[in-house]
Length: 333
Image 1 (cartoon, rainbow, N blue to C red):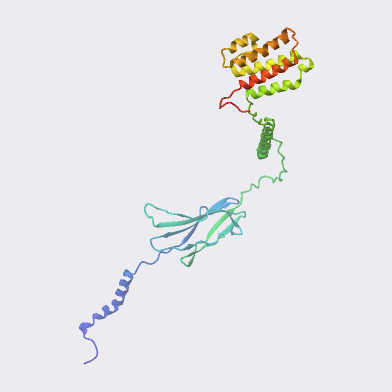
Image 2 (image 1 turned 180 degrees about the vertical axis):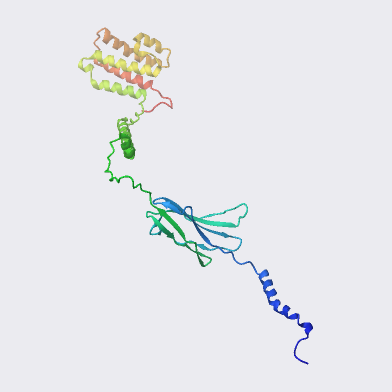
């Protein structure tokens, strides 16, 4: 018996060769999906501009957040791309959802650069190198074509015009100097208000000290009688003046003490009115003696004796002391 297999088993050879392929396919079918491939893009809104015109260069990276975290590091961008292509404005990175309604897991980071060029020619924009999940991925290079302004060679060249000085305009001057003018007017207004305030404050009268409490009536009357006695009028042969002041002091006291119009009445009228007052009878009799003596001196040219003058002063002092206000709430001397 030889070592060959029977012919009936020859058809098993193809199956043996196909078995590893089937296993590999099964493994690939059951293996998890590969991580998403994130590639940045760079696009120009226009590839051709005139000298000094602007173009917008958009850098973008689209990725999904449901297929694993995407760690994206943008390249460092300065104020120029190349020596011939400066950057005028940088919008910086912004994250958007391109189709939020249909695919809320699709995100896109964008950045717009406003560029220009001041030299005509074909200027290459090199790839921008991104670091995505640890791998460096670059954008496709771009070409910016810068054209010169067409010159009409059929016309003669003209020299550069000299500097033209504009005529003076008050409106233009006010438009340029209005901050200083407004500041000056505000300063003047503040100083004026301060001066007016200080003047009003200076003119304002100082608060007067409160008047001292008024002395009681009998105290004031006794002081007036004492002052009259110190004048020594009757000693100087001025009896009429002495008795006039004496009766005026008594009349003023009686008018304020009893509410009788003593200054406007005659002696008889005053004595009659006092009968209805609270003045004691003895005090009315003392008053009557003083008033009659004064009337005789003033109207009858009576020459009173020294004792009569002294008795008139004593009677007036005694009348005031006996009729002084003695209520508990009466003011004190």
